[in-house]
Length: 273
Ligand SMILES: Nc1ncnc2c1ncn2[C@@H]1O[C@H](COP(=O)(O)OP(=O)(O)OP(=O)(O)O)[C@@H](O)[C@H]1O
Ligand SMILES: [Mg+2]
Image (cartoon, rainbow, N blue to C red; front, side, top):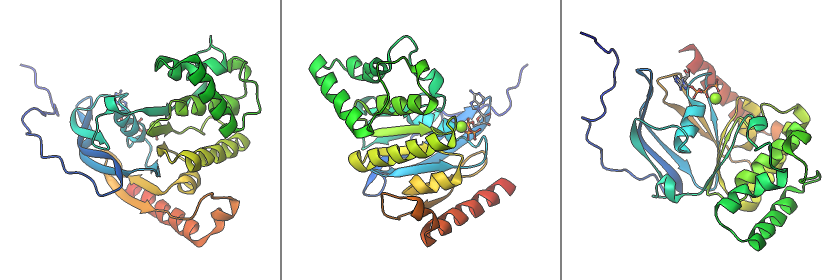
């Protein structure tokens, strides 16, 4: 007889009535459960993500930051639970995703401009509409490099700029970013971080950002979502409300320093637990 240890049983749990989030909530996660190889990563996990805000996800290595945003973005299936966007399911929601590894994110056989326009073409937009949207994107990103080049002809920062442009091209309701700066050098990181903030100020797109750099996570965030070790729970959610655009001066404000220190304390507490 074979015995499967830790095999999760989901079917017997009747679905709880859906509990909506507070006013201003965009994404509602209820009862999210995910097992890998019989071990729980998330169990009955609830979270409300506010609309038109940037939420930075921070937590110990391997706690499930990427898995969380990938489940919300529909890239990884969930075992149980519900995720709604303004009360709608994912299939009725337009999302964008920026991958950490920009080198593998673009189609190498397409010019950069065609990579960016690709999701617009998939939506069946006319050539005139595609051209208009591309002109808007180029203006808002203040692109200084040649979009007619192939991705591999661009620098890392330029490629990641193009990836972000592609993700934003269709005007997503939510933008997911998993460590979008981690493969970039410092100068490019600063540049793209500012671009992202500018785009956020222009569009107010809800953003869910995974970052392993605490300073960056706080700098960009309206909320810092601190996670525990697995099985993963919310350790704490810190609001950070300094006005935008945030600048180098922001880094020395009392509120920034306090939020960063508190985030670090919570992180260390969770790592040691
Ligand atoms: N396909 C998979 N099969 C089995 N285990 C997995 C799989 N994907 C992720 N895991 C495990 O789930 C946990 C969470 O992984 P995830 O990549 O989401 O963590 P993370 O917080 O993004 O980590 P990092 O800080 O390293 O980016 C890890 O322990 C990982 O080993
Ligand atoms: Mg990760």
